[in-house]
Length: 307
Image (cartoon, rainbow, N blue to C red; front, side, top):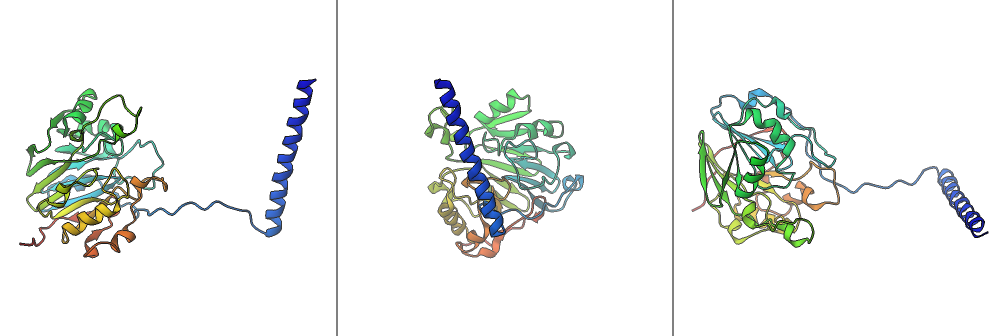
């Protein structure tokens, strides 16, 4: 008897639900339009400009190409390297077409990785780049992960410098040990030195790739770079938007090559959602903002430095 009663009640409830759905449909039809859920606005990168082997050839200048995400390709007078390339296999929907496939890359003198998050250290991308890459460089911790994958990797401490071709690289500090703030996220205790930025010296000028980091006093007292790979997302474990504005204004003439924006379809996830239009309204000398399309070339040139 109880089972029959329950069955009758369930049947009755289902009927009410169906009636409600039918009523909603009828109301929408009478009004001439069905209700739709509007997707939250998200700034998107310009249309991708694909490139091929020509981007890796001999050159008389230093050319930078944004790869999407936080990744860049640099060809400095024939010395070629990538920073934080993500070119396939990301685990969230993406908004961009990648400008080149890893298996189409003919050669790289190096791949530099700032930290272990998969939007910077893409395992599938780096495994497919292995055949074309002479060496991988990162922190001591990320080097251990690379070694486990069989990559020809080298680990460095913060402040260390190394060279390949015509480029000198120095690891700069980062504050991005966010895993420790969330119990259960990782069994490992992370250290700030597990992540880094890179200071790059080329024959045509300097580039600063700060990596993911909370703002520190050191970020505001670097030598003036000739270009910054600029993360301006409003995330507490990044610079925050206000912190990014402080960095931009600390180096008022340095070109800002925007990254960490417009690539991932996640409008509610702040680390992927910088908006160039908002940034332009907040910093001095906004004309130096470079809203590159993935694959679009930027020619590095020395800027005039203040006294």
